[in-house]
Length: 255
DNA sequence: GTTGAGCGTT
Image (cartoon, rainbow, N blue to C red):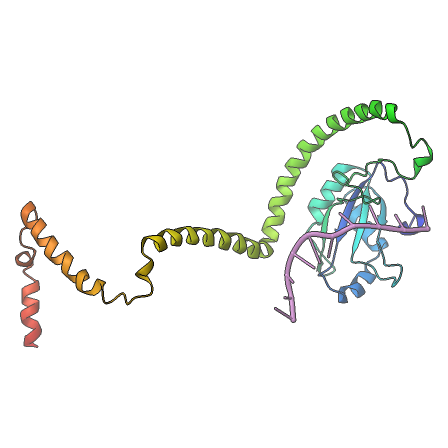
């Protein structure tokens, strides 16, 4: 029982597989991974639930572990708990990632780490059951649908939580992505904005901005402002209203 | 120079 991988694949149909990634994306880590064996992982994961099997895929050619392991739990809630508790946790000074397996041994997609028995090597059973397939299909579909319903609810809930937790932990890594998305959006905005301004005033950039705005810039506000204010009568003489401005002026030359 | 997600045996 100690050697999990050696026992081969037990009854994995009713188990929930967790994918454990514990490395820092490095070949050097292979050495470290080497140290981390199924026996080492077992107690760690067994603490959170009943571990049925632990499998560490290794390259048969080199015999080196690929840097991840599969932990099979008997119950989903325990597996979920392990994911929640061990995901992002530092083990042996290394942060490990624990998540539900997405693909089964047959490269089939599995839900919530649960391995769905589609049609493994039992092909000899009855590979061709066309008319009956429909019947089975309906049954399966109904059963799956129901199961999926409840599973989905739980999953959604967990997923949100997990996602949040993961996001917080990985905010750094998500940063670049964020910047990318934002940059794109901004660029788009800029482009749109620019396109408008470009079409509106295409000569705003190339020519000297000092030449044309210069004479007009200082002139218009002055001439227009007074005339208008004067007419309004609201701010009759801004100049005379500032008593302090005059002393300062007179003082300026004085000193 | 770096990152990141990565999915399977007797």
